[in-house]
Length: 266
Image (cartoon, rainbow, N blue to C red; front, side, top):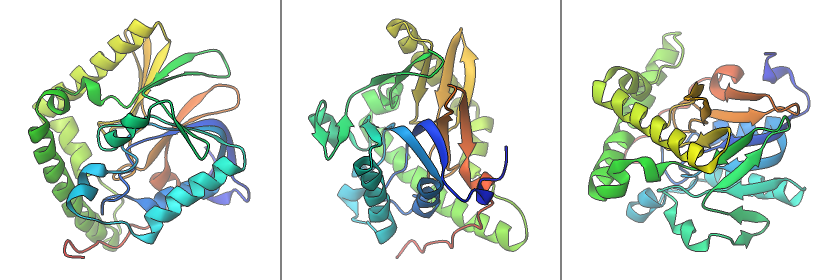
């Protein structure tokens, strides 16, 4: 597709789906997301969970101006007429106490059914309920969250050095997810469970997040779509006006220089 850097006006989509932003963590690529918000527009935006990282904020308060700017710019789009649907995940599970509520035009719901312009019905869920670790061993999930944050910190420094040497972005955790046998099996089990849930709802496809791995493919006749994340891959799912669905790898499309690493003590 054409470079989005050349657009003088925001690219217009019917629908945008984003998840796993993890505002409140140092790994959040808020600057990348702010650029995405600036250069895109849509009729409906789905926040597909883990937008705010309540787990991390309970332990250490971290909320720089860029994270506040993300919230403000999204609310500004709502005031201008964009519909915003928030499907909480496990890291922002505190919002599940307010399902069915509207906050400043933001709809909070456990799940949603989205119908595309060409008639496909998509179940929209975060997906943590199909993660056995989160569901049945929360202490292990919290330990895994700590390990993941540590790996992101290492990955940031590693990619900073790669950029200095003239190499492109490379995700350590994405590599491990594809190479480590247990991780591959976990992802396969997760995808199948999500697809089975879509079948139970009698829909054509499912949009989810949670595992930070952007993907779009048919599984057992169901369109499985994971919209990725904004701590590593910086991806979003967009629906074009004709109903066509596409995953945008924003950091790659915009050819961003890597952000400066943040000291763990900062």
